[in-house]
Length: 210
Ligand code: GTP
Ligand code: MG
View 1 (cartoon, protein in one colour):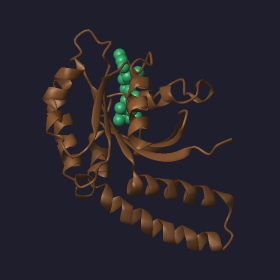
View 2 (spheres, helix red, strand yellow; view 1 turned 180 degrees about the horizontal axis):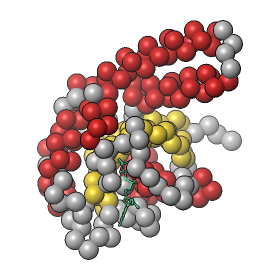
View 3 (cartoon, rainbow, N blue to C red; view 1 turned 120 degrees about the horizontal axis):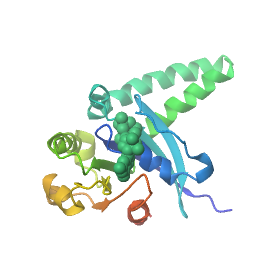
View 4 (cartoon, rainbow, N blue to C red; view 1 turned 180 degrees about the vertical axis):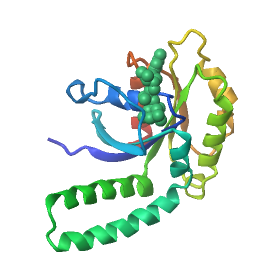
């Protein structure tokens, strides 16, 4: 059949906001994990839509890992160094695991360097940490690489099922999303456990990328 266009996406947001749960829901049911545990470092996931093939870089939102994504440009150079090293290793016909490590590192590099979209997840029930989420978002938006790119950002105001969850409009106000003028953005309320609201977001993202 037709080859789908490959899209690299960076999925960011505070720990416990629901990033991994969202990505898990977007995968075909036979590939979905039953138990979701806090992500350590990062994880690379794939899913397809009608016209696109997504590779998602699911980052851990925990504080001690968060500076990974704040300073991800440093990562790119680190990964570049690894790439060179592994290319050399491959030349020596090393065992297969070296190749899979190489592949993994290469994928990270591609997503970081050429990420075509960002998914930013917010826990709408976590009012206390909304300011922290805003700080992280502002750091991201001011990053020298992100700042001058028209990269689309999809926000999920997740956990809308919680009784005291803020609405997507309220979350958008608290994060001052109206100030983002140089990038297309969109916010959807979602319930990642039931899978509600996710399709609307992915449809929007698909329209931005095509
Ligand atoms: P880190 O990997 O630590 O950065 O967290 P994460 O953002 O990947 O969050 P994760 O997907 O691991 O979800 C954290 C918890 O929130 C899990 O217990 C999920 O079941 C729960 N959760 C995720 N989405 C929702 C939602 O929409 N509603 C409710 N009620 N719980 C959710
Ligand atoms: Mg996670």
